[in-house]
Image 1 (cartoon, one colour):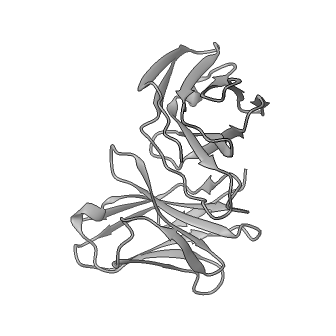
Image 2 (tube, rainbow over the protein chains, first blue to last red):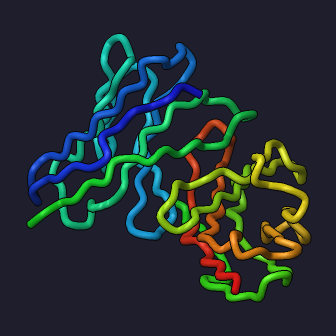
Length: 112
Length: 113
């Protein structure tokens, strides 16, 4: 699986959009970008994933650059409950390689 | 989002004792995983389990660890002889298919004294 690079920490004002970047310059054509988050000591929570098109769900939007070497997770209106560690993970979407490799992630602090 | 449950929420055990951690499956989820997170460190993959057998395991998953679905329901992680360094949060995760997103449980905090 390709390596990802994320900033260690970020702050965001409550109600504003939180934009979390991720670099994955060695991503392969069949690798997807997944985002998970972990709210203090809880189990990681799936947020969104994508291959090359931008994706949106009820939690967030995922913007992937055209060359697929980086992506941005957008929380459109951050709340205090979005304070968490956010993980960008790149992996092949195959039933034989289900494991997730977590890095250090980005600690997002949403401030009032 | 499918709910994953794990029992117990907290387990305290003495070094050298055996512990069994349990995960309650969702009926249509076929893939199971165990991860652990030592305090202040990354979430680490331990093992994946499909069709009643291990499909992949990490270097951490040595001979003292085992997994099974003894009655086709609960998915268990057994640590035969616990060590101090086994103290961690242990998370179970499930997926309907290895290619889909994984749903994590709230974890079991294991404390080895």
